[in-house]
Length: 176
Image (cartoon, rainbow, N blue to C red; front, side):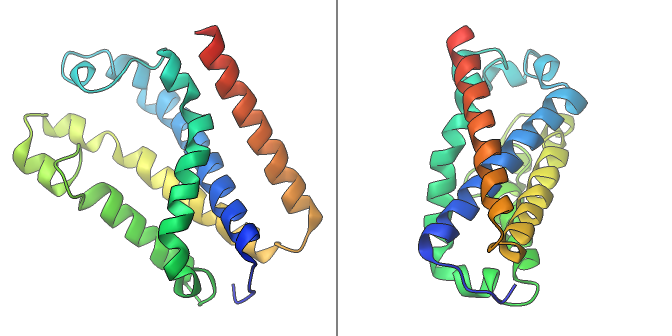
């Protein structure tokens, strides 16, 4: 954990950890929570696109840009999260807290979502498993990435996964 990384390596680690975690958590949610059926319900279809919409298929590829944003946001906090003991655990708790439970607006599943929206509680909590899987994967991938940063296999595997996710996403967009 206490190994220092250069800026390019830091950005790459955040981008691929986020993109891979997002992709796997999305597959988990689609299969286990059955997003295809859930998003077609009267309540959720008002705010969410169907899973077979072209832009939804492109979503995993577009997460590369969200990974860049995430890396920029975390950059000033790089030392406490990436170099201190239990820093990634703290990062995971903050991500869950700020992006799920205590958002600025009344998003589904957030504190304000329960207060200010008409969305039934059952629908509000359905996103929690996906969010927890995402955070666990993101922090786990980052932890492995930091621990084995100097190993070429880490870089090769991250590139392979990113290329595969990108190609599947772009093909899904083109074929939809």
